[in-house]
Image (cartoon, rainbow, N blue to C red; front, side, top):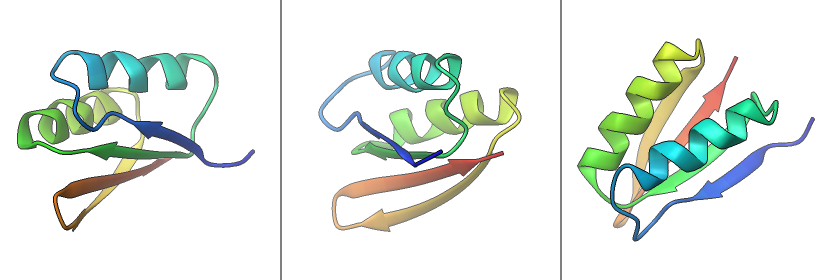
Length: 70
């Protein structure tokens, strides 16, 4: 299965979490999530942990890139 990209930049919580949760519910286990604020980073990271996915987080300018995999 290919990597599912979720672009949640410019969205305030809970929207990024809802988008990522929906992607996981659709069966995606390999995700690349883009957010642009710390609150979204923290909340998405918590969701991934609760869903049993490992998160690799890095900063790219103003974007925060979260790679998640089983």
